Length: 125
Image 1: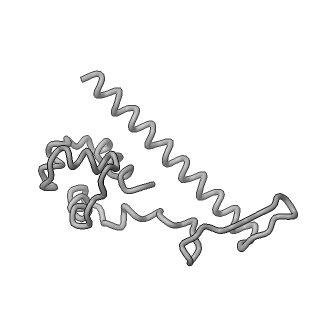
Image 2: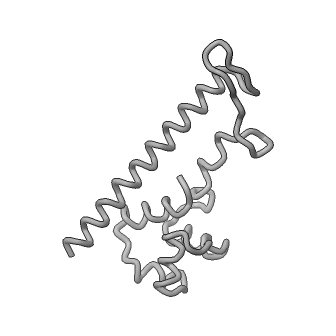
Image 3: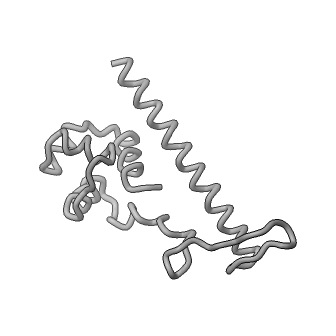
């Protein structure tokens, strides 16, 4: 799950008022919206403040990043199908990557559900 999605999830789950949040961070409402909509990148110092605000370690935002990458930073390459498949990983490693990707899809689906709830709540207000 990407950093912005994790922040949005924390905001929603902990029912954080965005005004309190951006005030704590020392940024404007627009800057926060730019971060949350990925229009601008968050600085390291701001991310540290975000972690402090939610009482989580900074590593929380990076925990599941790069799990499907090998030590060169590039995902594994597998070509072919069935018994003719070739690549730089074993079948069990390939299955682990498939399982991890399924988990990431599940995470993204959960975020979509959360964002839909947020939209619904905003329409009610």
